[in-house]
Length: 77
Image (tube, rainbow, N blue to C red; front, side):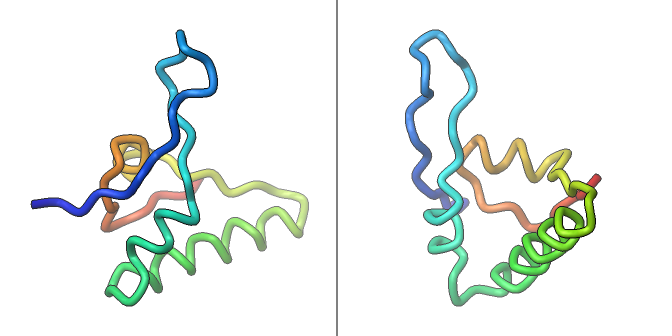
């Protein structure tokens, strides 16, 4: 059975997009083999931002996050 983490309700009733609770996600993967890769992704995105760029999560990892699933890999654009 796949692990899940809590997601917040949509900001607008008619919206199909949910907010992602990153802190809940970090807590769900804490102490697992998945914690370090996620921290690396966050660090990379922050480094891009500090240098005037942007790092965006794309692909299946975004789908997994919105579905409340733990992602095993991350794609950055």
